[in-house]
Amino acid sequence: MRPWQDDQLHLLQSTQHEDELFQEVLALSKQLGFEHCAHGLRLPLPLCEPKIIMHNSYPAVWQTRYQDKKYLAVDPTIQHGIRTPRPLVWSDDVFRSAPEFWEEARSFGLCVGWAQSVRDGAGVCGMTTFARSAEPLTSKELREKEFEMAWLAQTIHVGMTRCLLPKIMPEIDVILSSRERAVLRWTAEGKTAGEISSILNLAERTVNFHIRNAVAKLNAPNKTSAAIRATVLGLL
Image 1 (cartoon, rainbow, N blue to C red):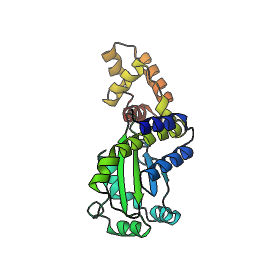
Image 2: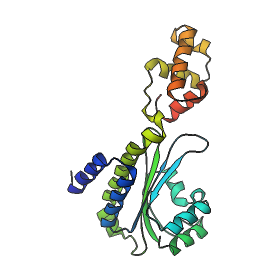
Image 3: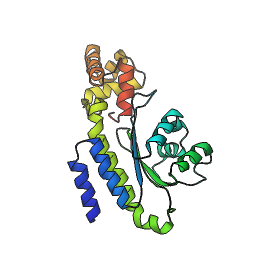
Image 4: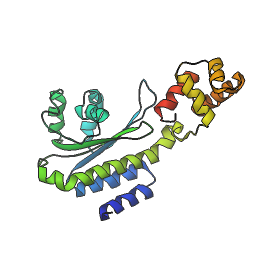
């Protein structure tokens, strides 16, 4: 393991609060030659309006503009990160679909950037961005730094989920029994409790017992919602 990897693992394991973690990562990003760092988490729940948590060091006025103009919905880097974990280097071509956004971002000194997303087994998507006002990213710089940048993106994702998810998405720690998983799988397939009882050779009241337990554990309003949540969270 390289020395900087050991340092980052220590950072991941020792930092207990998300704000402290972000400040540590920001310091590391400056060592890599970037003025700014950003990290966002997109939670898988609720399905209709997934919760998004942002940390960044961008100018405060730009942060306000980004929110007020709802740039999150048109930011091409976000759309890229949702589709693929491939690293992305900012360019005019990347922002072709959002020229106003790109022009305004550059007016705040956000001219050069690199981003990479991470998606984990619980369906949580995170994206880390490093940005600066000048000095384009050359092929030589990418060859020298991109592995460390990608490692740092993974490290901050793991650290942020460790710090945040127990507080804002307690379902992440749910442990379903084998029977609860089985009845939810068949529920997701559209089977009734009676049909599931025949499939699993269980009494119908036993099936309903396991369904009720799963619904309670997942804090779901009904069995259909419980099956969806369990699927999204990778519990089935």
